[in-house]
Length: 134
Image 1: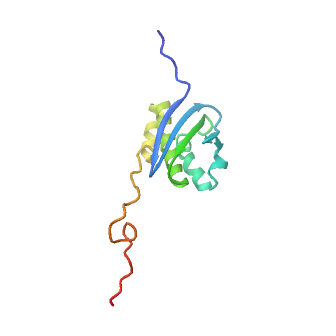
Image 2 (image 1 turned 45 degrees about the vertical axis):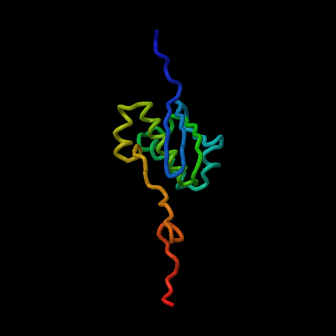
Image 3 (image 1 turned 120 degrees about the horizontal axis):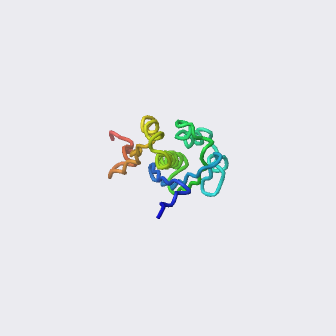
């Protein structure tokens, strides 16, 4: 029995509180995020650039169409999660030619930075109430 060929490649990306589920299909380069075009979902050009970085790194911007479901966090964290998910899905698509450049660029590493917890006696994680001598 012959193995079934995958019709898409999958990757999960995470950043801060955001989780992105990414499916990469062979296609012409359109990116859909939560059933909206990338230009409608991400209004800032810098965030669209962040999302496209893994594709540009491996010169695959017009080889794949991408569908993303992303939840949680803000738009900057979501853009970072999408970038992580796209990089993982591209490695799933062609590990031999894509893994080394994506790893070198740092797109396969989960950015573990997150919000620091609030401490007792402080207003935020590190912000203390104003000091008064009297």
